[in-house]
Length: 192
Image 1 (cartoon, rainbow, N blue to C red):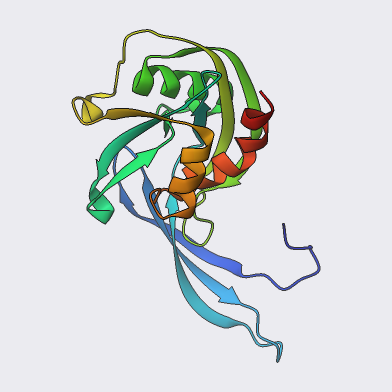
Image 2 (cartoon, one colour; image 1 turned 180 degrees about the vertical axis):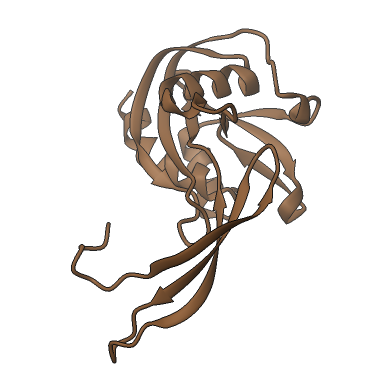
């Protein structure tokens, strides 16, 4: 839910790029936060800036497909839906192309059907990155073609919708985007 325009909001005083790599930019903002007494309070806010991404539920009519990999920041194995972003300037404009590309790269599947489920933010308290959630159906197998950084790192697993529910509710899924995308796509899978 977005905040109504008449509600108090922080105001940006200045911004600077604090860090950059091929996958993200970290922006540091000097801000003024509203205070109930009417006096603005100064502060600093760090924002992780990343391009729009896609998260895809691959459903073959009976089972849901997951990819697993070690996630360095949390030093833990994670089962997830195929997901990612394109990092070339302007590449984030075609969200369906991003979804199809990530599905093909991480699973080898080409989707005959692709349903847009919604758009969410990954971590709105620290990042501007949003993602579009998709349901991929009518899957046709092909070669897996991961990015160079993921080469040899990805594993594949299939589960029934009930098994995926159990994983999500039992703590077996640590990726919040996967859990949120499953929440959006689950009813379409169960109706199939």
